[in-house]
Image (cartoon, rainbow, N blue to C red; front, side, top):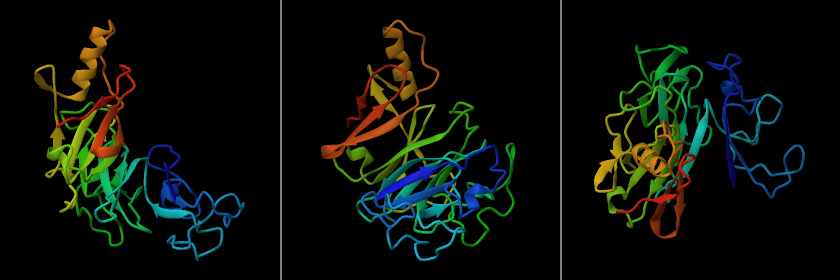
Length: 258
């Protein structure tokens, strides 16, 4: 199966309500069978167990697996139990990590994280997580958190079920994309929103503990370049429980070691 995450198409606040429109692909996670032929154009397949596969009509696309996303950035599966996770960039206030199930509505643009969306500048802090049928984040953090840049954005996600890095075994790793912060939380007892269960990964490099942004900035100085102001972090995984950190700013791929 191929899963495809699509943003809401803009502009700010999804003014055309595309993420909630099941007749449009925007703001959705799609699920298709690349080698199949039963789509409308015959160039790919639609799995029979997709949540809307049997609905039919122009108002509901059979390719949709989940809806209500603003800008999905990373998808990951937990091989221990099949859980599927997505990181979704918020408008201007909340970044989120969510558990995704077939037919899930992740709330956008009525909700930004656990809170009612009001505008690019505000969410309603009254009655959080109060609409039945909406899938709320397992964890979320504010874009204005003091450890982050103002332009923060949830990035990739990995569920770590190996023992090569014991400190991360049984944890869900996810990133703040521009800042390069690496966050983690338990994969076995998922929280119900908020940021209380979120922990940071700091790196031992050059005899001291640093963030990835600090490591990349130092490498750029060695290269005779200006220090980095962002990282644009992406995760990579390999055999034997290997986890790699990739960025756009110093030409180096790093491997996380215990």
